[in-house]
Amino acid sequence: MFKFLLFDLDGTLLQVDMRTFLKEYFRQLGVHLSPVIDPEELKEHLEFATYQMIVNQNPEKTNKEVFWEVFIDLVNLPQDYLESLIDEFYRDRFKNLMPYTQCKPEAPQVMDQAEALNYQLVLATNPVFPSSAIYQRMQWGGVDRYDYRLVTTYENMHFCKPNPCYYLEILEKVGAKPEECLMIGNDVDDDLCAAEVGIKTYLVEDFLINRNQRPFEVDYRGKLKDLPEFLKEAAGASRRT
Ligand SMILES: [Mg+2]
Image 1 (cartoon, rainbow, N blue to C red):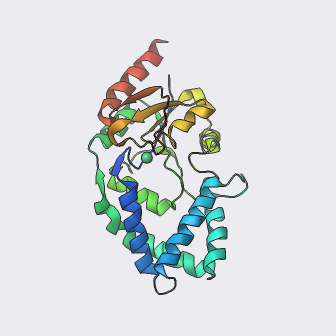
Image 2: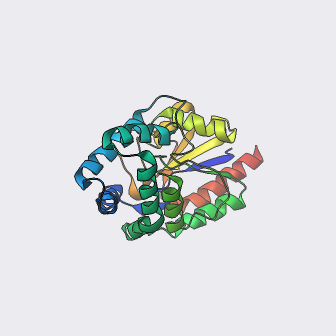
Image 3: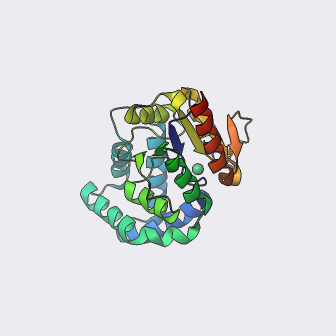
């Protein structure tokens, strides 16, 4: 039935309240960059540049390119210099944010089962972060050691969730048809919009986010711990057909 499983990370495989996490992220990055930028200004500019990245519709520019064009314009510092400071933050200090997340023991169990059943794996986290920040969070969640066909990062993607083009880009990159894929995530807006391009969806209800309290449709739903059984049944169903 499905060949490709697309997994969201934050709130799905890794337990994290992004509001608390981002607050602490801005605080710590603010401290790190305080010799060159006022922390309040930094936060404002980061939020604006991130927003521009999320609404970008230009397929010619990676998220990273969109982010830096906007960000550099606002902060008025040389990009090389600022980028090396930010790289340093991700290398040396990002790990201090780990206590604001919790690994879920079910997450590696789900991935083990998915690999055992020969599903192709995609880590479909919103690509608003550099790969180093994404791989570290995957490690915190115990899901970094799997053989992903694609991990979406701000370097390799041109769109963000909830833009349906984000999902089309995944399909193109891994050579999948929409009906071969299942998007598994906890966010009604960001993850269920995969349905707009014909991808089936599984809502993980452990930490369900429905920012706008909107009614929604989903193909499947359940707890993360229910997924191994679900995947087994889905694989069995496809073998029978
Ligand atoms: Mg999420």
